[in-house]
Image (tube, rainbow, N blue to C red; front, side, top):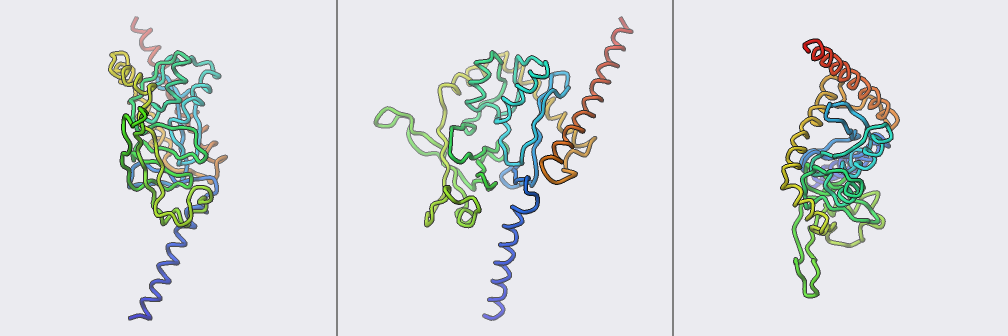
Length: 278
């Protein structure tokens, strides 16, 4: 029935507009992040660095869409400012981007992070973040790419490496995105983001990944996942208890302080037991 269909169309448009606006108005500081290509969350991320004894030595709170690997330098510098000397950085594939490899090489820090050809970032006017769990890039507005494909040649006619990975975004979202100015060209039939595949820096990291030293260091990585689980399960850190970056930062500071006290006490008791046996 045309009359009913028209009203249904109006309702559908209203719901779509409401959902789009809610995306940007719940918490002015929070942003959409992604754990996989099919799941997302609205909020913040807490990036932590800890010793192999499981004591957290530095942390940074960011909005949900931020790339984990981009926080590495900040975490190392915070740890060193607190008196902790870093001789190795152990992390997942998000930390194997070129800037981190260059930084750790210059500082003499061993980088135990498995290389991912997708985690390659250059200097861009609008920075797109790579989500390691979903294997996709996320635009500054928080929208994730819907598909990707490879393009180019390893050796083009002029001898250059033109191989890139193209990430495609939902053009319908781009058309109405509040951040479309300078990012989306009006009338365009597609929106893509390209990333060059492999550099000499990453090739060197691939060689290091095949060493026994790398494998031994990387075997310690499970500890950071266990620490994140402890924060969420014992201190209810899976949800923000207040709106805004300030509230989230306070929650992070208190939670990390408490979990560190617990760990330090455990280490002290363990030391006393060992000394007593000796």
